[in-house]
Each structure stands twice: as structure tokens, then as C-alpha cells.
Length: 542
Image (tube, rainbow, N blue to C red):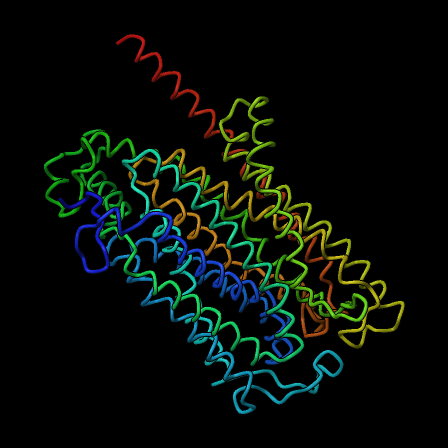
């Protein structure tokens, strides 16, 4: 029946639990997810390629990275819908996944052949003598990044869902294995990220971008081949349609009838969607009303997420103008992200087994803190990260001025390890706010919408990242003086910028976003308590 969950093997036949699914099938997915994370984490240093190889200025480099991050997140959301409504998840992975390999190969070709990138020059020492990439070279860059975003978004969306398909929801023991799978998948993701940040980033910055990008392509290709070898063992859910279509149908019909309380069930059934999932038209309208009540939280999270991409990207860029030495080893600034990543990977068991229990006894909440509190805590970490970044940058600019390095963009005798604290705070913001929104949707949304919680979070984060591009360009234009003076972030020389002012602006923006979020979160929680009390009173009367 349409709308029911039906699982089949790779030939489309009914699954045999003795041969399909289970822990054995997920082993191949662990490998693929870890290897894609390994290559993807090296993209933190992509801004170095844009600046050092393609000679793009500070604003343009940040804009490109923002577009890339936003496109990956929007692609993740779209692939969530497509894999639910149109094609099987295994098909999506092996059709769109290779786009990552193609994207890396195009980047490797651009970095290798002189005709595909500007003439090599020391942009940090002689920025005025370096020509920025343009025309066909930029087109090739954008095409490469688009290919990567499509494939990366597909794997982010489909691999966790495909892993969950390997365990039956009807069997309590196997259903519990789903949460175990997701925990191990997070571990594999973190492990792959640490490897990529420690080794691939070093290869890209020391052995050459062409070698680094080709290594990334080969690593993802190996992951896809390993996952393909497990194809006969996968248990795959047939597409059943996305809940978003049904919700939009309710909104349209409800608006046409001028009443959300009296929706004709027959009319909904004739709309050629899977509306038989809902028990009645009234339930549909109630569920849609819940989503409308959640809308202010979504918009508030959009504002909270906006500074994140800019803080991360600009912190990595400014690290190129600092002392990267650690003894005889030169450490790229992007590799420092491996430190908080490793810390969180090791602390995750402690958080779930110790800290959550302690918080549960204090707050009474099952997970220690509510999803809304997690989002707020993540925003607070974002404010702290912006303030720390501003202080570190102010000190760096002062050191550069004292040593007469203002005219060049590198060589500031200040250790890159000063950036560790802000990277650490940003990683907490990433885990708390982004994960908190997914938990919020899963706990508060109607049951038919819970499956698209990651897609909702991806959409919000994606549009927020895209908005970063307009934000940084607008600020740079508005800070230009009328006598032809440059804006805070003009040019390619970080020692001439006012990045400290920009970081403070991001911190102020995050403060306003947190105040706005707090207002709507408290209002939502108050409405929820009132609704719960009314429901309890109705049950008591009955």
C-alpha cells in the first residue's frame, strides 16, 4: 500500500533477514562515511587555495566558501526529500556520490595545469602584482564546487538513513541498534575528520594542492567501492513520498476553505497524495498549526547560524598570516580544528553516560537539557567565540604594526595556536545549536514530519550560509569612507584589515539573534505548557 514502509533487496525482492540488513551491512557504510568525512574535513583549508592559488581577495574567498557551505546543506535537504519520495537511498548514493570524486578531480586539474589558474606569485608579499582568477578559471572552480556539493549532500543525507533501514522498527532489539549505529557513525565521522585535518590539510599546504585534491578524490572513490561491495547485503526502503508534500497540501486546501478547523477529508484524499496517513482532516490542520507555531524558532535559528560560517572561514584565513611553526613542523591553521574535534569525540561517551545523568537529576529532562536550551547554549558559545576572535585579532594587528609588517600579509610572529580557543567554542556552537534544532523538530513536530528533521535543519543552515555572502559584502561596502578609503576587509592583506571590528560586529549580531531567539523560545515553551495543561484537564473530564 502506498505510504507504508516496504523494504526490498538490491534486486527489488522481499528481504531475507538472514541475508539482508543487520550489523554486517552497516560495516560498509561506516567505511564510506569515515572516508568521505576525511576528504570533506580537508575543505576547511579550501580558503587557502582560493587565496594562495587563485589570488581571490578576502571578501571573495569568504563569499565562495559561504556559497559552498550553503549549497552542501541545501543539497543535503533536497536529497532527503528525493530519497524519500523518488528513488531508493542506495541508488541515490551511487548515482550522486561519484560527483564528489568528479569535483575533486576537476580541482586537481585546475591546480596542476598552469593554463587553468593565474600565474603563481607571492600574494602575501606582493599582493598588487598578483592577478586574480577570472573567466573560464572561475567557471571551472564553481563547476567543481557544485559537483562536490551535490555528491556530499547526497551522502550526508542518505548514509545515516540507509544505515537505519538495516534494522527493523518492529523488533525492539533491532530498533535499539539504530541508535547504536548512529552513535558509531558519529564516531566514524569524527575519526575521519581528524585524519583529514591532520594529514590531508598538511599535504595540500606542503606537497601541493593538485596532490591533495587527487588524494581526496581517491579516498572517496575507495569509500564508494567499499560501499558498493556491500550492495547485496543492503535492506532498502522503497520511496513512499515526502511528508512535506502532504503538509503543503493541507496548507493549500485549508486556505481555500478559509478554515483550518474544518478540512474535508474526502477532498484531501482526492488530492493524489498519501493523505490516508492522517486520521482526519482536523488532525491535519492541528499538525499544520504546530508547524506554524514552530516557524519563529526556525527563523531565529537562521539568524543564530549566520555568523558561524564567517567566523570559521575568516579565522582559518587569518591563521595564514601567523606563525604556524611547532618546532620543525609547519601546522596549517585549518588543522587546529582537529583539536576540538578529537576532544568532542572522546568526551561524547562521558556526556551521554555521566553528564546527561547529572543534568537529568537537576532538570528532570530526559536528555539533561531541552533542545531549545541547547540551541541557546550554542548561540552563547558563538558570542564568546566572536569576542575571543576579536581580542586575538586586535593583538595580532598590534604585533604586526610593532614589527613593521603592515605592508605585507604574512610573517606576524604570533603563534597560530592562539586560534584554538575560538575554534573550540565554534565547534561547541556547531554541535549544540545545529544538533539542538534537529532534536527540537524530532520532539515537537507531528509524527509524520519527524523524519525530515535533518532536512529542516539543513535548509535553515544552508540559507543562513548563503546569506553570509551578502552580509560580508554589505558590511565591506558600508565601511568604505567617502574619500575612496577601503572597507574593513578590502584587498588581500590581512595586516591592513579591520577584522577585529568585523568580529565584534558578528558578536553584536549574535547577541541580538540570541535575544530574539530567547523571546520566541520562551513564548513557545509557555504555549506548550498551556496546551499540555488544557489537554490534561480534558482527559480528566473524560
